[in-house]
Length: 157
Image (cartoon, rainbow, N blue to C red; front, side, top):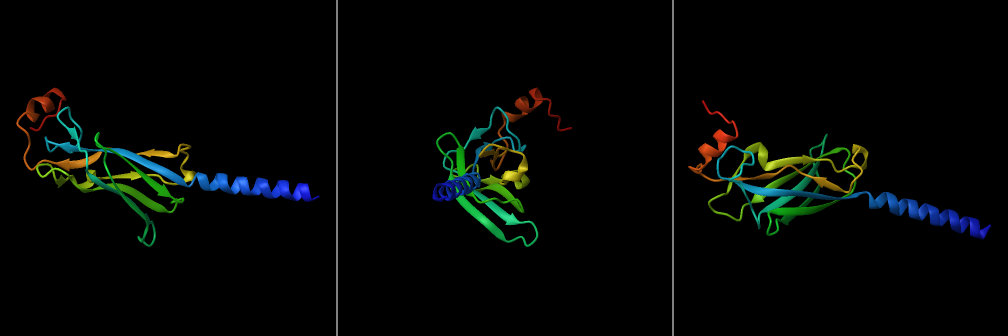
C-alpha cells in the first residue's frame, strides 16, 4: 500500500513538473536597420547588434501588464527572451526599446512590435516562439534604395 501511494505521488509530481516545464517560452527574433524607410527587410537592411528589446504581456480585459522582460541583441542582431507562465488571456508583444545606432534610431511605428503567442493552448508545440523582424529606420532614405526597390517590383508612383 505504501509503495502504491508513493508511486501515485511520484507520478503526480512528475506530471506537475512536466506541466510547468511547458510554461516557459523562449521568444526569438531579429532587430534590423531599414535604410530605405520602407518598413520591411531589403537587401540593404542591416541587423542591429546591441539593440534593446522588450517582451511584454498585457491582460486582454484590464490591459494590466502581466509579464515584462528586456534583453539585448547579440552580435548578429538576434535576441532570445524568456517568458515564464501561461499567457492565454494576454496579448504578448516583443518591441524595440533602444537603438545602439544614432543614425538608425527612428522607430517603425507598427513594425517596431511583433505579436507572439505565449500559451500552451495555441496549437504550437514548441517552446520557442519566433517573432517577425522588428527595427528602426534611418532619418533619410539611402540613395541606393531606389534601384533595389525597383528590382523588388516596388512602385512608388
